[in-house]
Picture 1 (cartoon, rainbow, N blue to C red):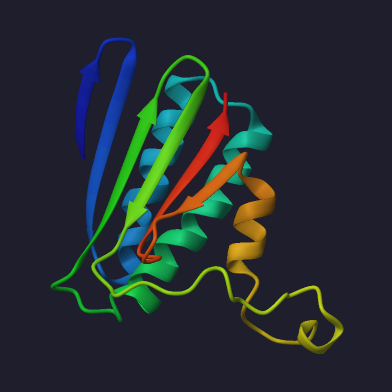
Picture 2: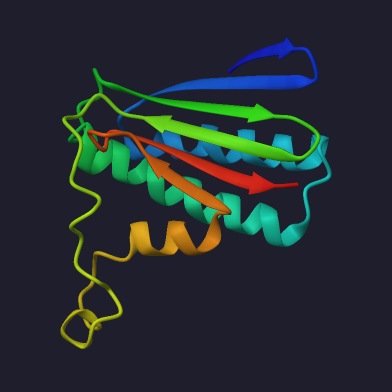
Length: 140
C-alpha cells in the first residue's frame, strides 16, 4: 500500500493481483481507514460490501482472473468524504444496459445484483465511459 498527503487530503493506493485472495489486502485497508478516520459502523459496512463487490467483479469479470493483470484501488480522503476508485485492465462493460435485478423475471437469478447494490449503498457511484473504472463516494 502506498500513502500520500496532499494538503488536507490523504491518498492510499493498492495494486492487487487478479486473484480472489487479494481481497484480504483490500479488507485490511478498509479496516485501517475506518479506524483512523473513526468511520461509523454503517458507513464501514457499506464500504466493505461495495468494495468487495467491485473488486471481485474487477478480478473475475474485468481481468478474467489473469494474475498478470492488476486491479488498482485508490482511496482519497478528506474531512468530509472518502472517494474510492477501482480500475481493472479489462475492456469494461455496458453499465447502462444491465438487467433490472428487481424485475420479476430476474428475482431468482443468482447473479446480476452487484451494481444495483453498490448504487444503493454508496452515496455516489460513477463509472468511466468504458466501464473498467468505478468511483464510489462515501460521506464521513
